[in-house]
Image 1 (tube, rainbow, N blue to C red):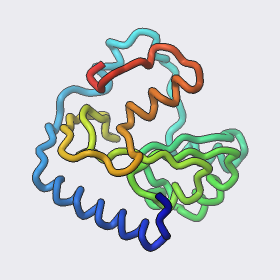
Image 2: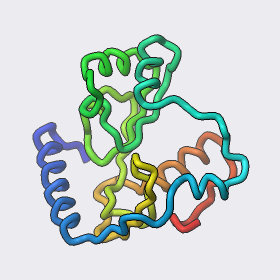
Image 3: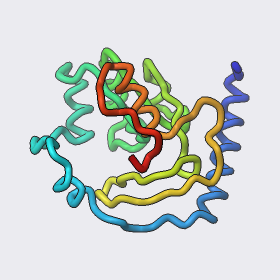
Image 4: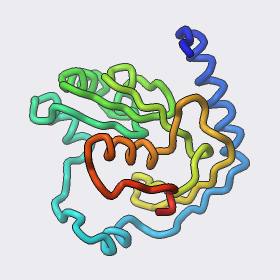
Length: 171
């Protein structure tokens, strides 16, 4: 189904309104455990600290980072210097954005993957302060949107990685 830009914007406005309504009536558990506690339980997890988002944007601008997969973030709206961020992201050879909306960052992407919103999926997610929160599915995702774990597993399988044959987020 091909929608005009106006229809797409209306769709996203309606979806946002629905999610705002569901958010008022959905109770999220504030803290189950921390990512640090999970890190201690996962074998083979690298001890090497990666780049921060700001460092990645800077590296993209310098040409040291050639591709980026942005998931559920909108650096063109949240970074302090959005003009610099835009210039840096535009230098990437390949940008993938996985999000529930066609954000400013997604508009720059070579590929946009439609993700399900919190009320459209079951499972947990880690917030930026490293707390893990539990969510429960209330409504089905629209169109071709999928839960993050489904998208990542499908991508991993496509790239030939093993161990991604999960049937639910509980696995």
